[in-house]
Image 1 (cartoon, rainbow, N blue to C red):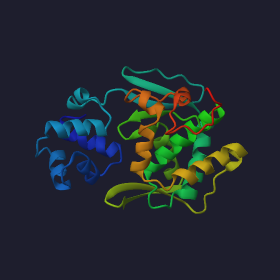
Image 2 (cartoon, rainbow, N blue to C red):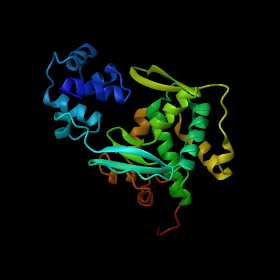
Image 3 (cartoon, rainbow, N blue to C red):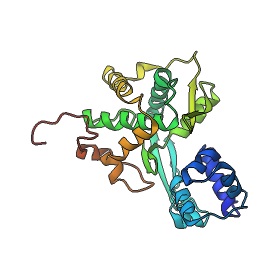
Image 4 (cartoon, one colour):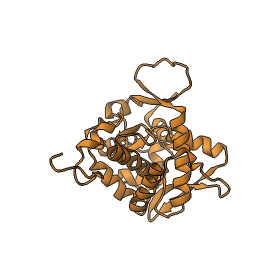
Length: 263
C-alpha cells in the first residue's frame, strides 16, 4: 500500500529498473537532491512533478493521487480466459510468438549485445523497427509483439516477462553500467546459449540482420528520436498500443518499402 507520494515515486522507479541518478538527471536535480525527494525531505516543484509523471507514463492527475492509471498486462494464450479488471488493458499474445521473440532476443544479444551503446533502450527500439519494418515490407507479422507508446518511445509489452524468465534460466544476466554519463541496463548472454534459429524463415533472418546492421550502432537517443518521427508512434495515444497498419502511412523519414509511383 502506497501511503504517500515519495513512497509511490520510489516504487515506480524500482518497478521500471531506473537508478536514482537517471531519474535525477531527467528532472534536472542532483542525485542527493533526488534521494531527499524519495525520503520525503524535499518538496517537488510543479515542473519536477510533471517530468516525473512523464517518465513513468502516468497522467499527472493520477500521479498526484498515487495511481498508476491504466494497467497493461500480458496474458500468454493457454486456453484459459481471464477476467479484465477495471482500468486494465489485457493483451493476449500466442505462446508461439513469445517463443519466437525469446529466440530472436537471444540472437540480437549474441550479435550486438556486447556493443557499448546497446542497453535496454536500444534493444527496445531494435525490436520495434524489426517488427514494424517487416510488416511494412511484407504485410505480415514477424514477432507480432505489442508495443505501447510512452515518453521514451515504443515499449514492447512482453519484454519484462521474457527477460525475467531468461534470467531465471541463467541464459542472460543484467549488468548496470553507464554509456557516457547516462545509466544503462545491459543484458549479457551466457556464452553457452545458442538461439534456435530454426524458428525463423530465411527472409526473416535476413531482415533481422539488415536491421541490426543499419541500426545497432546508433545511440539510445538517436533511435528514440527516429521512433518519435514514425507514424505508428505519432498517431498512437499515450499509454496505448501502436497500430501496425499505420506503417503504410509512413513518411520518407522512416519508410523502408519501395512503393510504385502513385502509392
